[in-house]
Amino acid sequence: KMGRVFFNTLENIDGEACAGTTTYVMKASDSGKTFLVSGGTQAITLLPAADLIKGWNCKFRTIASPSGDKTIGAATTIIHGATANADTAAVASSDGTAKTNVIIEAASQAGNVLEIVCDGSLYHATGIQGQNAAFSFS
Image (cartoon, rainbow, N blue to C red; front, side):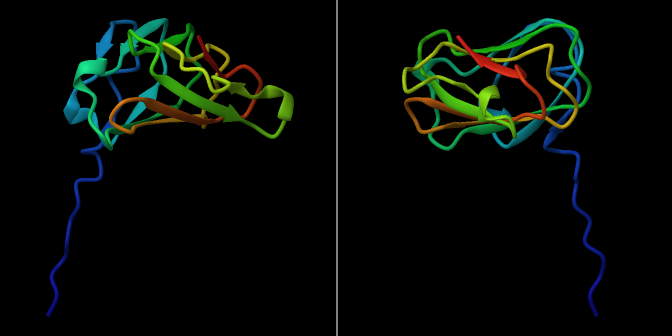
């Protein structure tokens, strides 16, 4: 006879860290989390280059258009990536040149997703957006 198995479905969801304006500094333990994005302008700091972990990853899911940009920064030029939507003119990309920041723009809408994965020496960002200018690189 099998009993019920319960999973803590909320343990990898963070609805607070990216919902305000206070700087959030990522931790090694944030790997595997999905951050729900809303609120105002905010700095989000990735793990520094000296502390990169191969396989570290997280997702940012916009649940409400932020009133300001959410700048996800690595402090050094170690972020590569691209985002896309149905309008091919609406992509954002690092164009093969590492950048310091990937930005969830105030134009981001509910349902947009940005995923970041570390290969041990670089971060790789991939985004899916529903409208123009939801993500950018700098």
